[in-house]
Amino acid sequence: QVQLVESGGGLVQAGGSLRLSCTVSGRAFSTYGLGWVRQAPGKEREFVAHDGWNGGYPNYAHSVKCRFTFSKDNVKKMVYLEMSSLKPEDTAVYYCAVRADYRPTEYSHDYHYWGQGTQVTVSS
Image (tube, rainbow, N blue to C red; front, side):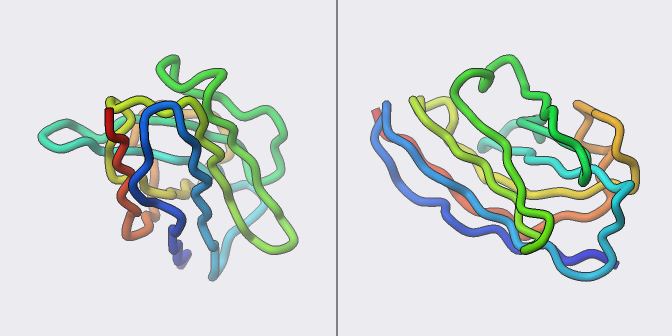
């Protein structure tokens, strides 16, 4: 079992930055994959970024590429999402997620474990 707790969300003006953090606890194996997924009001969950637990080449959704940066600290078991040049359309609940497979995926239903989410609101 894996437990995930996100933090770092909040209200920010367009063009601003935020850093989300995710604490990973429980049995997280080196073969696992880590992801960030978001859900805007009235919309489906949307893939944001992914990397393998032992990876180093994260992949990103086209909508956030060059603005968001995925990183992790394997020793501290922390996952981060550095977000810059934020836009109102980035407003969503952001979830940290883990899947029992390190391979990249852009499908939210491929993830097996989820955090409770953290709200990010970008004002125009």
